[in-house]
Length: 328
Image (cartoon, rainbow, N blue to C red):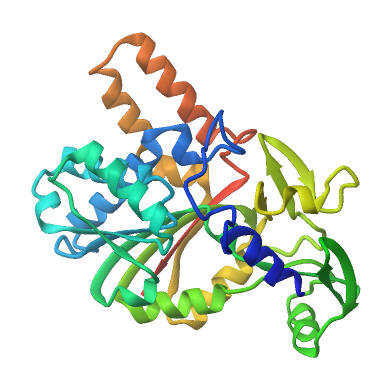
């Protein structure tokens, strides 16, 4: 089968890796910005709040997260919005795009644990199903979880019995690669439909997402498997695909040039593209930390400051991760 179909089954098929909630952090396969610090979500919410105050967003609209895992990010955002203006929790509506029933149950349980009955969340199977006038849509590390094809010297990867083989690529794939100056590497499958579905589901939309990657083609393979914080390149001799299949996470660096092309063609415009460090500082993460320092002990402040350092340090998440903001 084509590699993209294999990856789709790996991540989202029956008993796939994302079929249920996976541990993130020390006990899981990897860390994310959300699992690192609650101020990640607070800073995004702070940016959204500024947009609301400036009249650039609708306080009667929706806050929607795509790929919410346990629900930490949207809850951290709601908590900060309540801190800024409690009435926003009354006027805004909240949603999560998630089609896995077991994950939905886990998210609702966590949201109830955080807010009791005060906050209601609506689930959508697809962003195209939302059908609202305005939404601020947020996502963290979902672009790297789209299936991809692998191309090398005009040949594409196929998988037979968990072994990668190469066959002649289609004319369409070769044409796409030539147009984007790609000779080898990953070609994400689904960005175009994702952007079109968002354009269909939300009439006026701000979409803010974070992921690791660049806006240029690397012409190298970045695809890899994460297992308990160990990284195995897909073509590493030590990696046995049959053993990793559906048990471990598989991911690759995002080609943000491809993402931007898909969203621009769907009617969005690019508001910002920058490193995670620059985005979070612009969103106000340092100011939030300083406010926190006035309400807590020195030890708690030092712990949170260390977490934020992980998010914005150039040698950690700060430069490797990027933020892109699209508006329609």
